[in-house]
Image (cartoon, rainbow, N blue to C red; front, side, top):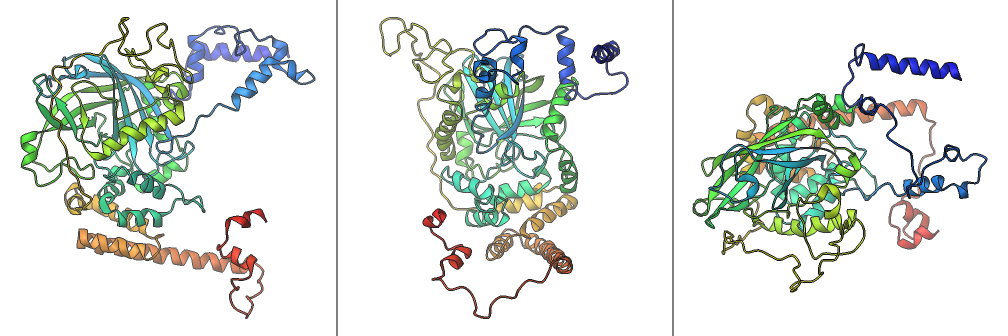
Length: 561
């Protein structure tokens, strides 16, 4: 035994004396070793949950009284509760800390303190995620990505929940449930179902423009560092004179936008489901800090009156020539999260977290998000989720008390009601806040012009257009009638050339799938014994309970037999 320990000791000394000389390890690979370099000795005594130290004989429970071993009880009982509810959407993600620095004076547009001093730096935490995948899913799958930014400003947390494409797939907040269910797995097969996807798209065509972006090269960025991000909504800003402007924020990657083609993504996915997370971690660990420029497209209330489209419609872009772009500053990520669960899983981003000078969007989708984000976080993290360390603002004094932990200091002995005459926290008067609020009337009519514009002008060259059509036609192959016919009808309404070329790709794909199925059946026939042929009596009758069950026409009571 002593010999083995001696060899181990020699190996450790050898590696410490010439770090990473023989092999170049990525930051993600050397995380544990880097920790050891920072702590040359054990960081302290191991304790049980209540703080009493662990005695070495309690670290083994074989041939001992397990019910008298508090370490054993603490360890197993807490392990059973390690997981909190997984996010319904954007479950799989990663994150990093950094800062936002103001580079340009934008006081003309907003009195928000976070933007109103050139050179000012504000700490941030950012969570990147993929929309539909579960915690164990693939980051390289062709779907929506997100970059949620929390700025810890002096006036409270400002959350900008941004997406990898500049348009969204619905306007009505009630559509959220149905659209997400259609994008998720089939409730019986447990598989992604393109028929349900195209069914909802053709019945709610407002999402087609978004889906076109997803099927183009913008659908799979080459990692989180190399994608742009868009908070989607049109935000209302106000300056110190009470004047309002309407803006769309854009985060533009300084690494240069880069995309993966479908074959490239498939090759990466075969070996690394965590490609995006690994890339981000290694870049920060190597000192190659990812950065984005924050800018905003701006309109005035006067500009809006002259438009021939709805600038608050999240399913479309603003038309060129109807706005001007103003640079604001720079977002830099330069620090790993200290603990993934604490800083990423427990992070709660809410688009309703706004600050003075940014009253927020006025569209109905945003109104809906104000409600259900808070409800989701109450369910997942508890009603005191704003008191979790990563979510805490720099300053907070509130009359909200008690409830499930964490409650932190719970406002100690401060009066717990307002108004009071005993010097509890008091409100302030915002003299710059506009007195009038813009009211927007929306409708559910669908305009296919943005999808036509995307195909003809956003797709910048024929090669990109060809890749887009290949992805579109291929995604239609597993779709069943009559949904596929409905999809081609809408494609024809968008653009005849698009419909014609997509149908050609689709027909090739269907023929290939049919040939593959026939080949598989032929192979099965050579290795599978011949089964008895069906009875000549015809299909089972509906009064045959077992046969009816096999047909899927069963009732609740069938589960009891």
